[in-house]
Image (cartoon, rainbow, N blue to C red; front, side, top):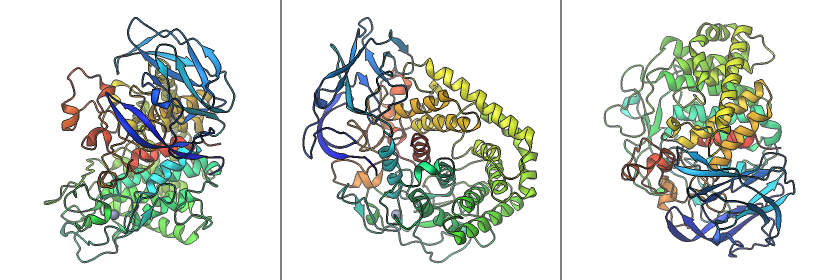
Length: 596
Ligand SMILES: [Zn+2]
């Protein structure tokens, strides 16, 4: 962590319609005079009517805050003030109000892009109030990346976890060591359980969600490795000679490899038979069991193909650091792909007696496409390229409606990795089609984002369960397009989605725990729910608004609540405040793209 300060502060905090007192928050990089326990200067007066990225803005990029105003009384001016002394360093005039239909807000943009001095600031709007503090700097998102990656460390299963002196009390002894093979797995007996990340706020470990999550982190390394290499995540493996993002991803990779049966097939998940109560990890005594399909061949095609994909990426990225692991991962990937050729679409549904997250997917052809592409990129062997070239065309339309990739739809990952393949020959028509369609769709996203009140890429239909993952997914899509055709607008628009997640939204809320002055505080996540600590476990991204109202809290919100406001910072609102490793991985990718 270069040039990063973190100080604990106590702030008064307006949260939705009620005042919540004495939230412990952590500020990053604030170069003022705050010490532990000191009130942030002016922060108690901050208004949620002004929305800023609570982490900050790169010094050389666009810098826009948003102001939501009552209809008919727009703000006439705004000031940028230095936090340390309240000095006005810039004055400007906000844009005319724009009606944002997804929130019902009248939004004005306060653009201070031409201000270029590093420091910590806030926005003041006469008759409206002041914003949360934020930084302007060269590498403002490094600490956010560190927090989001350590969020994964905090999710480790089967081992003692301790977030260290930076987050005292955020620790637990080894968990979920008991368990074995559930009858649905087609085998029996005990099992060596450690490894993997808890997911979805519970204590399950899920192969298909691990696929896209681990794959995304390893891609972040492949694309942004130069910027990530030196960042110390303060995890047990730090300093072992391997970059920490690869150390952390390995924790889940090793578990994924253990989920492979001797015939090459991969079991779908490892969970208890039902969800535990909201207890700490070490207090969940339900056995953690390997769950299969319940009938031969017991393993599922989607899970198996996902291991093939991740194993192939791992073979590429770990080779310089641990050649044995790279070989082991590649062997597993080859065997997994071969299993899917014999078992092209074995679907998983929760077997009798199992009620944990299903991650059912009726079609595993996209997972197989991704696996073939990653294996070709890793090996250059014709058999994998032939499979890809014979099958990709049916998936091209998926690229036309970004972000389009999800845990159950990984065809974009397959197409992009094929188009990113170097050193071995690829099929030119396939690569051209993938690149052109991705670039065209990214340009359409840029245009739409510029026209939206909250300057994000979200359509009304995107406010689904996990909508913050969709926002991060747009960012990832745009950054991939930038790999194909470098374009400042793609990068800036990807960052606009990051700004939305980090506070430039209707709630003026940072959707990452313990990041920014006004972060959400009640994730649907068992370790946070079971603890008596003043803030949730750090670095975790909320799922965000869900217009589908898939839980009782959201269902009870007023009928006329606009889609982007169907959110509740409550633990029980699993449909809007759950945390998931796949959304978290997209956030990491987006942050990795910001590092300099
Ligand atoms: Zn555990």
